[in-house]
Length: 379
Image 1: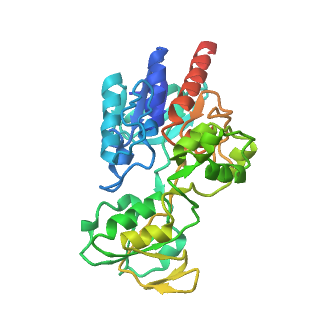
Image 2: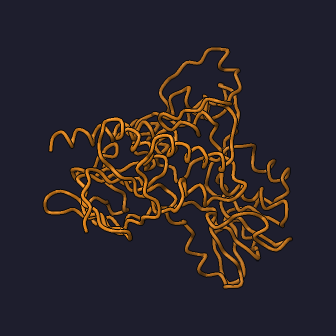
Image 3: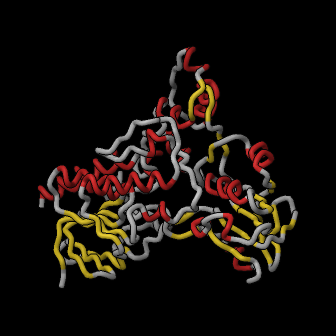
């Protein structure tokens, strides 16, 4: 039997929960459908010893649950999971877990068919808030390797005890995930980290140093006081201070940042960090065949295990609505698509640099909630 409802939110991560909060506040009937069996499922699936790279003033910024205790500290993924669980309980979020959306299509009457493995819904409006961690983006060259090399993605890694002690492990990708995983493994195994294209930025830096980075990104003119120029603060704080987080799409700075393939990783220089933590730093992987991978400097490595920390890609193949371009990117302006009643949240640079992280979720969700309400009033 079909269930009719005003709004379906697909995805119960930070954006879906934020939107639910605002829709509850304006009395719009809705459900949040989450394919995971647990609240904050994507965080449950990360490795055991993962630490958040965003300071607490960012990590704990869901609407109505802003937690300012130790704002400049850093918590573990488990703390973040508990925070999301507390949010759902505090706000009685209409969240249905373990529901996989298999198809979204548009009906002749303008409403949407939402087919799931738990039944069928008919919704006046649909918000796709599925999150970035859907399909591991593993290079095609991985298929050229023999079955004797154990390969897995960063999403399948759990802890060093997952492998026999002393294993020869290659971690591919030097983003925040790759660096943390190499560090975690080095306590028990022989580890090589193959660099990726991600730039590396210091965790803490002075205002003077941040201005150099800022100007290189085509940021608009700003003035720092002499005190600020010499002030040493967290990178994330400087991004807020100079307005980088909220720089909207279309500005020279946002365009330059959006053109980059991946986000920067944070911390000390990789050479120093690798030497301190006991893993080997290598050039990027350029090819793979049978029992070895070839690096950009022509060196060859034959690891027992390869962990591909090479990012993620979204899979929107289940959305049967003509809304995508040739690269399978949805057409939208700030999450509002040309199809009336269909919206997106959580996309990288949906509105600004912070749209893809928890800091931007409440702002973007509040905007979409206003669009949802306006559509309801007009129809």
